[in-house]
Image (cartoon, rainbow, N blue to C red; front, side):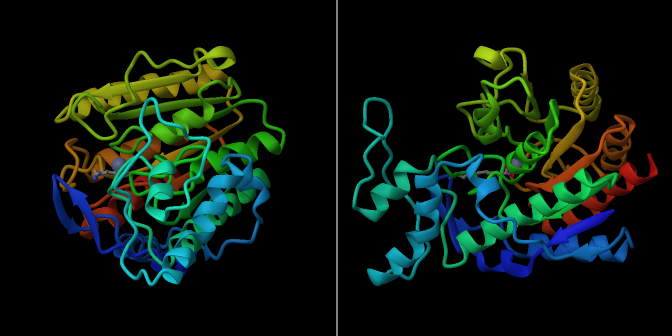
Length: 343
Ligand code: OKP
Ligand code: ZN
């Protein structure tokens, strides 16, 4: 399997995030991608290639121009004010505020375009996120040109990022960008399956009123788990998209039997959708030892996941999302990919 990877992810290196009211070191760190790359190469899974530059056009198919412009300039604007520390928002426009005006104040701009205080912007955040989008687009292009599957190995992750907002460590929604590229390449029906522990609220928001991209997410119940305000079972799509969004919230601590029942339901639905291509938001924070999540998948379960996805028989793009047990993240991702290759 082709792996698309760029070392530019290293430029996104936050120092701290706010977690339970405390400043703690970031969970989403560069070592994550390094460990996945090492494991991929050690397993001899295939070629590792740098992304091609696909330009901004396919990214603008998903993200609003003013949001992209903000991400591209925010660090330089901060540096021009003498800022050196990670940028974190501290104020947000909630219900009743205006969101059609972009304030001049930088921290207020951060709040306008974000939904949490856990996603620091650093000097290389835009460059890293952009490289990640190009990794996903390069993987998608390889699959569109006939490869059975490809793996976009990038960070920061993407599935919490929506049309014009970041959060949950995510800035550009790489999986959504890849799914849109399949549509723009002529696919009438695409399936996007999110198996990260956290609901893919950004991806859901992006495709909520569309019937061409079926979005499904298996995740910790948002009544207790991040991102809390979206990801419930009664969110089934709107307008033309009604019936093309499916959430499988499982209580934190759910066992693997329950998790694979949800996977089976999601897979059957992908087949019923008549999808021509599959994009997988591959988070492995479902791992038993993950420091911020509470499911129980281990190596054999990750292999089984890959095997089941292969049985769908679809051209498949894997996009890396979460996974914070750094020492095990590489083996867990490789288990999924090996399960797929063997399936
Ligand atoms: C990203 B992905 C809020 C911090 C809460 C956010 C978890 C993001 C997970 N201050 N933690 O889905 O793996
Ligand atoms: Zn996650």
